[in-house]
Length: 389
Image (cartoon, rainbow, N blue to C red; front, side):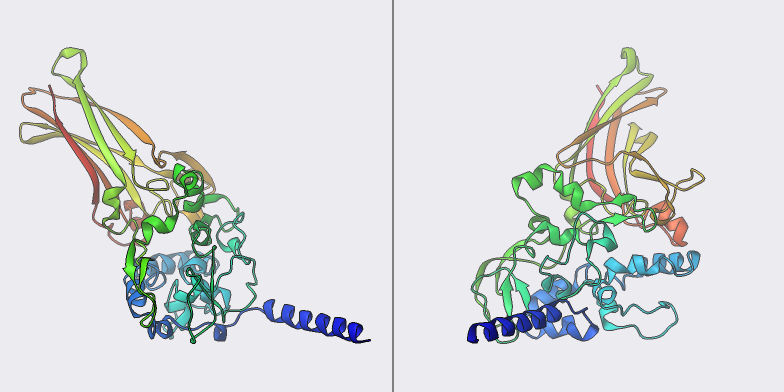
């Protein structure tokens, strides 16, 4: 009888446990990042400088979100918000009207906040799916345990467990992927670009580049650690782009006569574990600009974009949410080189020099026209120059 009673109790307890872990998460299950600041001051300050903390409030993103909301009458807005404010999405607290002037929930305003990453065990993510489908909705479980990286970490503030998933690129893959909301057509997939790269085979993770290592403490009263990772999430909006690429130029006169100059400019992806450019196509822009100088005067300039082409139903260049077809992909993969050929007609050539510059914009001319804003200034990634023999 005792054995039977114990068996019945274990079933009841298992059911209770199952009910607790399968409960859909609510707003009250999550704490704000300001709460984390009390113990993790330095990490919180790092996060505040990152694009993650600005993921929803970023002015450029807000312009695009408003524009999409107007054009699609709000039908696409929740899809766009899902990665820019994931906890608001998970807890179903995204307001139906985002631009009514009313105060917005904290989980929405905080963008990609501390507890989004540090409460994911990994079991609620399915990386074979894209974007919204990366989560097994409704995301269920518990959030009282916060996941970290150190086996010996202890605190009375909350339960803590080490997590392999937190340290993996798969964590980044929950958001850094983009499929068309209607067709499911894969458009942006930075995670898969890394997964297919030599860096993945070498065991180099997203965090190794985007979260620079340093020594210090994770918490005010914590242990001194030889290796922590800064929560700054460096990317295409920082000086990190200067480490991504290398440019070389070669030039020769066609037929030995100083009339037509043939130039080969090679761009190598030497520092990015994904394609360059990566991110949402059509918004970020990268191109090679080759100029020929005759003396001190620029005689001619040609440009060559590196892009994933997207087209609408009429065959016109489209933003991702309007796209129905993918065109050419001229972006450059990790540890790959793309050689571009140029031809320049010159007259009265004397002291000829070739200059090549690889440039990037965070908001492209195409995206700027769509949103009704000015394009952002070009940022230099790499350059090379050579005097023509």
